[in-house]
Amino acid sequence: MRFIRSDARAPMPIKAKPSFSLKDELFNKHSVALLAENIHAASSEFDDKSFQKQALARFPELELKERIAWLVTTLENHLPRDFPGAVAVLEAALPEPLDPDLTDDDFGKYIWTVPGEYVAKHGCSTEYITTSLNFLRESTKRASAESAIRPFLQQFPDETMAFVSKCSVDDNYHVRRLASEGIRPLLPWALRVTVPPARIVEVLDTLHADSTRYVMRSVANTLNDISKQDAQLVIRTLKKWRKAKRQNVSELEYMTRHALRTLVKQGHPEALKLLGFTSSPAVEIADVVTTKVVNVGESYEFRCTVRSTVDQKLLISLCIHFLKANGSYSTKVFAVKNLEMRKGESIHVKKRQPFKPITTRTLYPGLHKAELLINGAVVATNTFDFVA
Image (cartoon, rainbow, N blue to C red):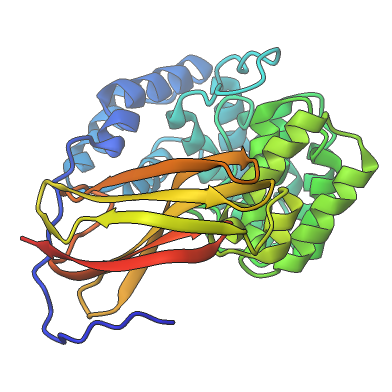
């Protein structure tokens, strides 16, 4: 049942001011100097001091993606006018590739995404597509080119997907990750491109058995994106991979949990079954205690006792319906417990959710709703007031 707020008056928003600036962490005078000095070392004609001065002059007024675009524009004013000449300079300026023997959490310095964005802007053409894609294969070994490849997927889908397929079997795991991350349907901060889900899965069929967690997590993220438009394709794909037995069992289970996280939060029966959960848990709920009024800076608390009437695997979550400015609600599911219970066994469940201002969610005073979910099914519900 959809929860609708009866009071139509718009509540006052409560949101924290950012305490950390990602744009300043990634793009600053030090990172710009690194880029400029490397390019100057590759070509003495590149005026690194002028480039830095022009680039940094506008940084205070620009957000993260705008800084990337501005750095590309500034490069245009300092690199050779002919595209092949500019690409040759940028390729010579690239630092040493990231350690190919590592398997995870080696993202490189984000400033090295800028050359790829330059190539995406100036080399996405029939004349230069081969040169451009080859550059992205090299640059992604220093920092991911997942965003830079998107214009090529949009304008040259067949040629780019052929390139992606080759990347999926490359010896370098950063190149293999480009194959999966670059074709994600909902890649954050990136151009939206339309690649048929079945065609994406063809690439993931190769990558799902990868030996690195860095690539596997990307495969799972891509499947999670697909699940939002074609849940059955994702279920079929994961079943097929399980049957193929090409991936280590524990790693495939990790990938499956990560790929199904959205469907699990939605209580999708087949997704839950694939993870070993029944969509109709046999439980008894007692001793429910909840917070009735939550002030700013305090926490909402939900406590109860859960008794299992059969042997079963349970996924316990708390779903909170947050009031929005227009009187509707947005939901957020918070994990509580993932466990196996014997028949007759009882556990005490307790979950606290802070209601303090944060940068990623705006809070609005008024009536909220909380639901205890077990295996995606609502087993207890209550409402509470959030007071400014």
